[in-house]
Image 1: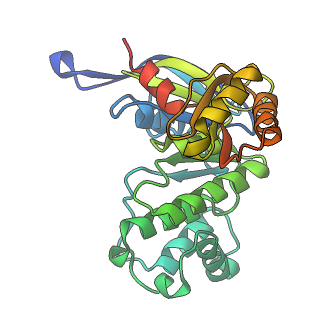
Image 2: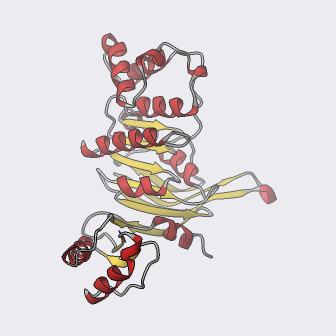
Image 3: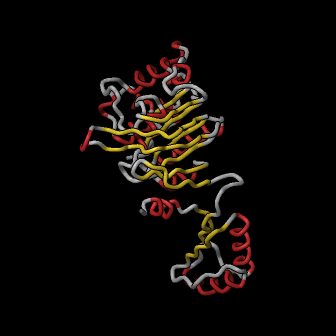
Length: 303
């Protein structure tokens, strides 16, 4: 769906120049959700801007469904939420969403209804829609930004820090909207520092550092790398759990807080570990698989 070939982008000139992208090449499959991770200033937002046709690379090529990113037929199928929400703050919430509904090609006669439905999907109260955007909190602006990006069910969705500044409920709402778009087959590119959320929604993750792709991690599908299993038992049963897990082929050390990490684990490994603990009458408080993106993030920053 998206092809990026040897793309480079430099800001400034001469000694004051900054190389934001340095020979980036990647592909995003149709219907895939791709996460971009990296430190601040790594080039993630610049890459998104190039994918959207807002910036032109100095060299290299980008194609979206075989066309230029700024082709009008591509933009008509694209939803975008920027990191910096430069919305017209004098518009009311309902007027803002209705305007974007019409821009997305929606029936003007349904603009008010569609705007109200979009607001409801992100948890914005009806009373907020009559207020001007300048009165919105950061979390409310993030929610309405997600609402406008998903208007008209776009085939392509680009989200730049969509849950930044939101409360836990807002984070969950953003996740639900991403999964909803994913379920209908949208191709999604997500830039986020919220690693736990990235892991929950993305199929693959690309690590960018100093304008270069340094690492790729597959989170879902047959090619998914083994994850780390996290098991938690009551602290006073940590010794018993360690003995049971070791006997079952999982070499672990006793844990004073009852938490155990099984490296290179898959779903069947986690299931087997939980079964062994249950048969030994050791209560399991928590059991989950994690890609441990924080560790991968740190590894991507290592020279």
